[in-house]
Image 1: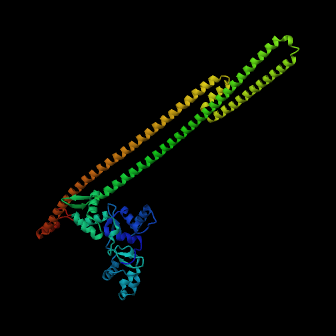
Image 2: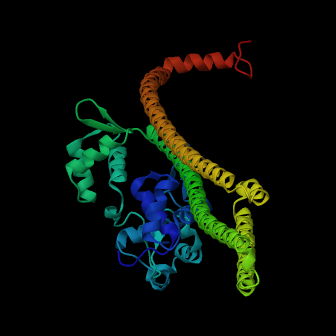
Length: 466
């Protein structure tokens, strides 16, 4: 049959004609493959549901499986007979121009072209021609699982593996191994007797519903696990950043301590020089006392020595001013450290109040450094505990997944029990039907009918005895 299918309705007709019945979830992949490739699966599913509900040639059963009504409209029977006779597509223009188109029924058929769309026996091609749904079904585009289901549906008494292979191979090239893998993969293919396989639609619907619930639960668990992992990753990155900041603070504190040690050493050097100068000054004074009688002679020399002493005193005072400036610079450095590290505020205030006690400052700095190292160790321990908690939560998630798998196995076992009860109910139904047929056969006896009529004559209008 030349030409492609015209609309979504024609694709659904072809697919449902070949498979007899399919759910919307099973129809969606085939429609997405044939047309609407630019849409997502959810959008295609919405359009499929809308199309199925709009046209009367589709109907749904109690298992939410859709079927194709092949009875059609009686007014289209003439066109259907013509297409069966010609065995090739035909346009409505050809129908109007043909000689048999003078018939009133054919004219009415042409006038009601819209009725062909809702008739399950006809499909429309993209070139405007009309054909029959039963022509040239392309079975190669359908999944192997659905082909096996169709083969077992057409033979409800069951088929062997080789028979299933022969039936499916006529529609699509495959292998016995692939078919056997499909039969053993899904629980709604049942092995009855020795090598005979049957299909149970009730188990299929239960299996698909349970599979959807299981996949939804897994997706929720996976999303929650991803959220928890992202949260812990952010926590770890935050702790690592804090650890880096603490390390940087430790390095800056060590640099400040080194600078302070250098300043203290310089101050001690200046103090030593002052002591040496004082010693020289005392020696000079002793010489002045020793040589008092030579004061007049050595006045100029004494004045020069005094001037030199004054110079040394001035230099000492300049040294003290430099020490004061250095202390001010040190206080500024301590203030900058206060803004960066709030935890060192009290220590720096005590440091500015007790600048003269250098030894105590060293001890306090050493104590603070030890506290910082202790905090670093505590932060590392917290990080290790957080990682251990993340591992424990991951183990709990895996245990929940294993529990869900066990629940799935129990549900499958319950499905098998439901199958056994269904088979027992079917046997009981067959026995009741046989009893009903025997009763009908006994009622066909003329004598029994005569007795029934006789009883009805003497019965009231409600059939009760008078």
